[in-house]
Amino acid sequence: MGLTENLKNENADLWNKILNHKFILEMGEATLPLEKFTYYLSQDSYYLDGLLKTFAYASAKAPTRDLTKFFAELIVETVKGEIAMQDKIRSIVEVKPKPVNNVCKDYVEYLLKVGVEDGFYEIVSSTLPCMWTYQLIGEKLKKSKGVKHKVYGIWIKEYSSKGYRKLVDKMRRIVDEAEEKLSQETLNIIRKHFKVCSEYELKFWDMAYNPL
Image 1 (cartoon, rainbow, N blue to C red):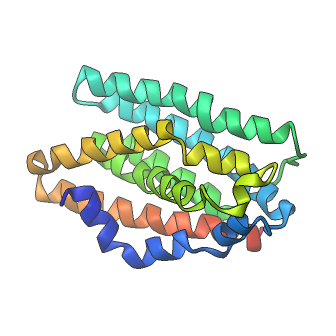
Image 2 (spheres, rainbow, N blue to C red):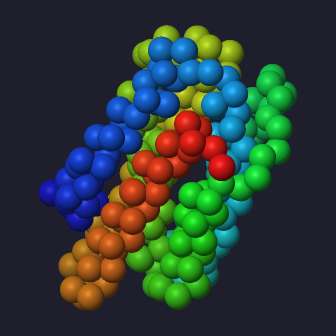
């Protein structure tokens, strides 16, 4: 069992709450009120801008040219994939700009602080909970009623796609293959970031029910 699977297991309770969150279940049943989804999307747009910057830090701090290249490409793939998907949804429904929720703001600030202050593998571990849980949510919902929804289906198909799975698998391999090279101090920091960002992911889904 690799490091990333261990990290996931160490946070099993958190991840179970994420994968079975009311927001996710309602989206799968196509009963999620659209205003809750559009509020979420307004916040996720802000988050993705922060994620792109965090990937840029990872690219700059990568220990090899191949990893620098991967994270540079990941920035492009995020723009072509997730951000383009959000733009497509905006062409169907109105997504009004909303003030940035404190949870979203704190999450992005945390990622950028890791990007500035920590090393490459710590940065990867902080971004992995978002990407990996979204991939698992996409796979969970790919045969749900939500796939046929004019909006939710677009979102589900993006995160259940083979292309997105490939990116997540690559990020997991990067961390797994480096485990034996990392000091105990770095591994402890990785565990901390993975847990904190998993906690933020759970809070992120809560936001639609508790907008600030």
